Image (cartoon, rainbow, N blue to C red):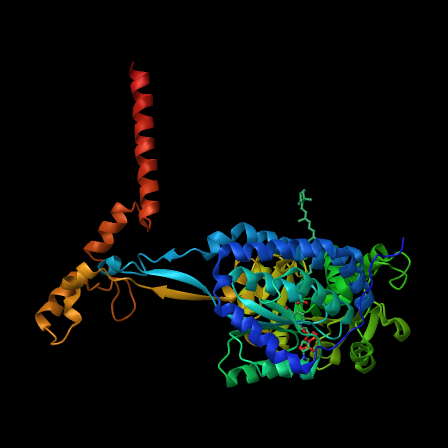
Length: 534
Ligand SMILES: NC(=O)C1=CN([C@@H]2O[C@H](COP(=O)(O)OP(=O)(O)OC[C@H]3O[C@@H](n4cnc5c(N)ncnc54)[C@H](O)[C@@H]3O)[C@@H](O)[C@H]2O)C=CC1
Ligand SMILES: CC1=C(/C=C/C(C)=C/C=C/C(C)=C/C=C/C=C(C)/C=C/C=C(C)/C=C/C=C(\C)C(=O)O)C(C)(C)CCC1
C-alpha cells in the first residue's frame, strides 16, 4: 500500500525570519509559562505522541536520507526519543524540585539559613544537530530542554533534508509554536542563528564546526554543550574472547554503516592473535551478511558523495592491506564494512576519524605499546573499548581517559538512553541523556533565607568589627584538622575513639549498622545459650 503522506522538498528557512523566531522564543520564556511543570509535561506528552504519529514519515525520511533500516530507525531514533520523553515525564517532578542543602555542605552553624538549590531553566536555547542520527541527536536534547523549562530553536542538519523537513513539521504542528521553532538550512542559516543571543547552545557535530560555534559563543559568553567526534581506540589482548570481540567490533561498524561518532576508529591488538581475529571477523561478516553487505536490507548508506569520498580517500591513501570488505559503489553511496591491517601509526586509517564502516587493525607487542599509541593519536577520545582480562581492562580504564567506555563490547555505554553521555577534552564539553539532559539546561541556583529573628546570632558580621565576638564564634565552630603538615593522619584520642565507636569503620550509618549487627549477634548468642541451659 502506498504511503499516505509526502515528505516536503527541503526548504531553507528565510534568513529574514530567523531573528523573529529567536525573539519569539525569548519572549515566550519571559512570560514564565515554561516554568510550570504542567506546561512542560504537556509539551513532553505531545512530543511523545508526535513521535508515534509521525513514525512512518520519520522512517521514510531516514530511508531517503541514509537508507537507514526501519529496524535501526525504530530502536535508535523514534523509540529512543519516545523513551526519552517517558523517562523525563516520569522523573520530572523529582528532577525539578528544590533540594535542601544541609550537612556537610552547610555547617550546622548556618543551618538556620534554609540553604537550598533551586532548579531554574537557563532560558532560550539553540540546539544544532548532526546528520548521522538526525532525529535522535536533535530531539533528545530537546527533551532535556523542555524538561528543564527552556524554550528552544532547533537547527537540523541540512545533509539529511527529508528528516529536517519532517522534524520541522512535527515540531511546528504539535508543540507550542511560541516556544519551539525549527530553522532549516546550512551555514548561512546557522550563522544567522549564531548572531542571536542564546542562554545555551547545544551542538552535536564535528570538532571543526564545534570550534567555530564555541568561538562565536564566547563573544557573548554564551555557555555551550559540545558533543563532538573522536578517534576511538579498541584494545584487544590475548585474554579476550576473540570470536566475541570480532563480532562486537564488527557490529560497531555496521550500525548506521559506522556513521557513529562513538564507534571504534582502530583496533590495537596483540600481534600473535591478529590472524585468528581476522578469521573471526570474516566469520561474523558472513553471519551478518550471508549474501554480502550490498544485498543486505539492514545496512545504511553513506549520507552523501562528500562523505563517501572522504571515506574512500582514507582507503585510497592507506598503505595497509584490506583484510575484510573493501567493496565500494558510488552510485549507491555504498561502502562495505571494511577492516584494514596497517603497519604504521601515521597511516590515514589511524590518524583520521573514520565515521564510516571502515576501521584499522594495528598489531602491537604489548598493552604498554597500545596505550602509548592510543594516547599519541587522540588523548581524549569520545569512547574506548577494551577486550581483555579484568586486570587488563582496568588498566586501560585507569591509564587512558575517554568520554565513555565499554568493556568487552562496543559502545554499549552509549546505547541506553537514560545514562549520561558526553565527551571529554576535545571530544566534548558537558553531558546529557537521562537526568543529565535536564541538568544541562538548568541553572542550579543556591538560595539562602535568613530568618529575621536570627539577626542577633549573626551580628558578628556587622561593623564595627568586634574581635571578642569573632573569637567566641571561632571557638565554637572552627574545625581542627586531623592531619599534620606532612599529610599524615594524627592518631590521637579522637582518632582511636571514633575507630572504637565506629567499630573499625567510618560513617554514622555504617557504625549504626555494625552496632546493630553486634547487638543482634550478642542477643542471638545469649538466646541460644539460655535455651541450652533450660
Ligand atoms: N558526540 C556526539 O554525540 C556526536 C558527534 N558527531 C560528530 O559529528 C561529525 C559528523 O556530523 P556532521 O553532521 O558532519 O557534523 P558537522 O559539524 O559538519 O555539522 C553539524 C551541524 O553544524 C552545522 N554546520 C556545518 N558547518 C558549519 C559552519 N561552518 N558554521 C556553522 N554551522 C555549521 C551543520 O549545518 C550541522 O547542523 C563527526 O565528526 C562526528 O564524530 C556526530 C554525532 C554525534
Ligand atoms: C538480558 C535479558 C534481556 C535484555 C536484553 C538486552 C539488554 C538487549 C540489548 C540489545 C541491544 C543493546 C540492542 C542494540 C541497540 C542499539 C542501539 C540502541 C543503538 C543506539 C545508537 C545510538 C544511541 C547512537 C548514537 C550515536 C551517537 C551519540 C553518535 O554518533 O555519537 C531481556 C530480553 C530484556 C529479557 C531477558 C534477559
